[in-house]
Image 1 (cartoon, rainbow, N blue to C red):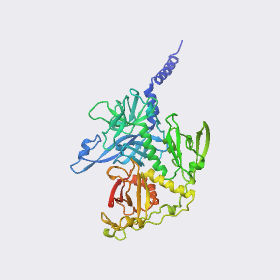
Image 2 (image 1 turned 30 degrees about the horizontal axis):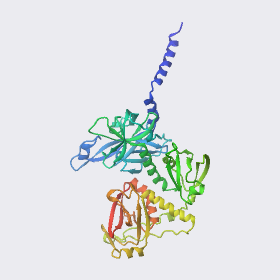
Image 3 (image 1 turned 60 degrees about the horizontal axis):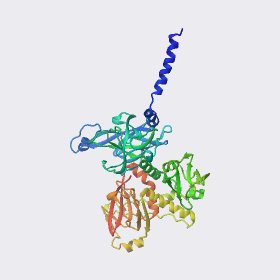
Image 4 (image 1 turned 60 degrees about the vertical axis):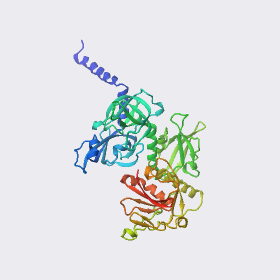
Length: 503
């Protein structure tokens, strides 16, 4: 005879096996992706009109007064070292930001790395207690209508909530957000609620195919996600701004159309670390700094934390043969720390604003005309173009006074400024910090001053590439402080100043 205990044990085992077998494709995908989803919370100050439109909790303030409310949203870990992508509208105006991971690790110190209002994306950074789990990136060209998907996020503060649905449409235009508009987004019928914004839309492989961004208020089951290729491109750009402060490798990369998950070297700058290592145009980049490379973003991630004293090992494939090469980042001739800040802090010469002239900037270090110094100049130009989005040519004091004999003294707001030359803008890239709407810098503008609003110390005269290179290296500091910059310039013989938010 069998004992009762003997009969119960197999039943318990069978019950455990039954529970495991009940996990469908959604549950398995959820287990993979939820590890990379975080909750974002903070405080926002809204006036009465804003609060009436907001789903956030808070009592309605009196007219012309503000009330603190709790802001909430979601984010996605994109690098194990603590980089998190979210919607810009989630963190815009948010104070005392807190990030909580799926395993309930709480982070109070959150760095605002960068943001892009046009695509409604922002990049945050925390110092992780242990390596984080980055999301798996899908491919937009492998997404199809009626595909099963799932939105993961923190609707109304319910952490790690999942909502299943399908891809309802692709390549939809979207202009419903305040500052962002898209030519091509993913439409889904997965339930998106306040708090879901910034979280991932994932496929049944647990891969992110988009960032949940918006819903139609006048409809049911119509929501939109920013496609993953756009997300990856913007993250790459925002990370490169941070990485470029320390290193410049000289590579231009592009993702292959003919080879899946392959990154091809489009060009290599002469005399750069990549050129010195032997990397060639047409090489397929397989690995960098021990990280497998499947996208341009992967390569940017591989350069995080690299300093000028490091050598970065890269593996390339050329003519179907793999080759390991070493990029010595010290090939970039970095000036000594005393020379790096070669733009003097300019303060008014007296305490009266009427006499608030800028003092001349300190002289830039001179370099001999050899290959290394020429490369150093080209790298500075690349960093200025990457961070600020402009290329320039210097205008000497003599040329300035010949061009503008009536502008020896320029009155700007309460200041009287005596420019000693400047830089002429030769090109402006689209969708960069210096090309935003009414604040756009134009080709042909002559820039002669840069001021951080509200700071009497951060006032610099701009007369050279070195000056703008200094500004580019400090740009992240301005972003983190939420500063606004004033750019002093002359356009068609008329002095202007432009307010440009650091972003």
